Length: 279
Length: 116
Image 1 (cartoon, one colour):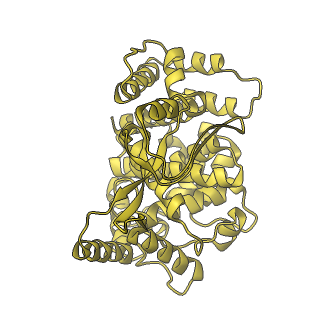
Image 2 (tube, rainbow over the protein chains, first blue to last red; image 1 turned 30 degrees about the horizontal axis):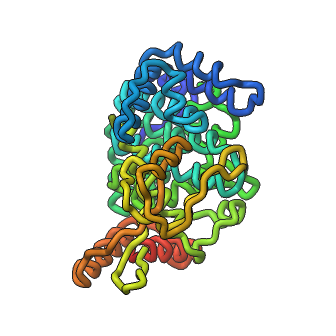
Image 3 (cartoon, each protein chain N blue to C red; image 1 turned 30 degrees about the vertical axis):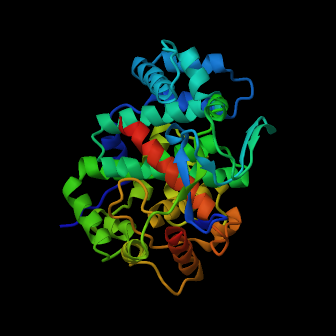
């Protein structure tokens, strides 16, 4: 028997998910604030002992790999190794990785999200959009699937199986078995968590961007299609079903041009990012 | 990403994380690192990396670099790799409309990338 999910049920059950990391919201607020400083960002990080430990650990790991002998014990020193530009990305990524672990999100969903986040950043660079927003939208675009796998695992598994066997696209299979698809569910959750409107739109429309879309919607849509086409992340069950012409136009991307360098950067960065957040 | 060196030995371009980079690797693409829009570091394609270069690059927080590597595969191994990539793409694109020009172009671009 099919389920008919409603907005109210999605929101009620979303409150049972682990608390959304407040540091992500705080870091997002610093993106558009010209007056924000490294000190403020470090202060946010230091309020979260788990993230503090992971940032310092990551910096020490990089230091060892690069044959440095300096042992870092605080976030300020660690930041000098990671780099200010990378710090927001690392903090958001590590926070969401902890969230995914607490929420028991399957590795393949998480690694797909990380891959889309990296591809979105590479695309964003080419159109002058904030790479921070692109990374966050990529990480969160399938948040609706986290909700589905947590609360309706059997029905969601049926939908995934239908998509992987080529019976129908995942969003159609989800609507058939559950009444709503992960884009709508993700939008409701983003609204509940108070994510920026542009990120909410990217989550809602990433499968089927509307003609008058925000650039971040186009970036997230095309990034996910490329990540699937390259089979990035956990490398299982990737499907390309649709590619929006208006989204490609918006980003001025033309696949008849030489894509080897863009694809090469995306693949190398996705593999590396998945390895970092897997630890 | 297949290229030819001057002695005709087949090579491939490969993007790798900086942590995997080592002295004596050859840059496959120019490496240009900027800070606030200003070029702070610049190495040309074909440059052989040394430890000092790697130290300079890491202090500027580069994440990946493009290097040239010898392609040691036999023609049979190449054919097998391309056939495997074609099969994988058939599965990934099985629900896509092959008549859609964009889909067709994307699939071709991925296959071209896999063949290099």
